[in-house]
Length: 298
Figure 1 (cartoon, helix red, strand yellow):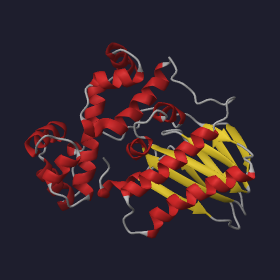
Figure 2 (cartoon, one colour; figure 1 turned 30 degrees about the vertical axis):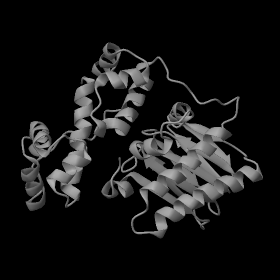
Figure 3 (cartoon, rainbow, N blue to C red; figure 1 turned 45 degrees about the vertical axis):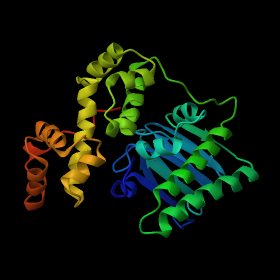
């Protein structure tokens, strides 16, 4: 579960009120690279650009942008848009384990557009966004339960609005799409210390095939990628929070601090306490840092 320290780092919710000039932002880029984004253009015009392609939307319209999907969104002067984004672990809590959950997970894993929505749909969707934004902005520390509930309603609404002739895309047999799905599952589940067989089962493929895809595309085994993500989160928490090593160990799902320390030292060459001290006294030497930027993930 996402703790209080991590929640605001894994969440964004805001409204872009009409302005005199064009504004823009990117999805699939730091610090929101691994966020699912829902962008609702209530009125005005927005251009979505990807490489050499662009799509011009007139409000009211909705865009669902999956993690690591690099697009530039340009909001024209005088337009209003609502933006909600969350990392996959926050989204996983919202999606939950319900009959609709598998379809919603597939739905948010692919880019979708809903154009020229009717007035009733517009009012309903605007209400959902406003409720989420109010929860995030009204308090110094939003309620994780409330945020999850608002996201759940928003995702369910968007999924239900998905028209029959625009079904949620299914997993491709191509390695690239499966690798993206594996990356998203890792974001959701890495604190649970699940075996690689669990990930293969969720993807509907064999462990051998998952290993082959990761080795071919990234020259690393699935378990190595999973451990790198866990080490990255440990490093971030040691650098940016004052929580004890025991608290961080518990938050990352380790059975005890000794197990956590052994794992972390194996990845960085330093114990958690020494790593934190090195970072705070100086700027930790490059040799002590974990190569976990994930720039080579899809």
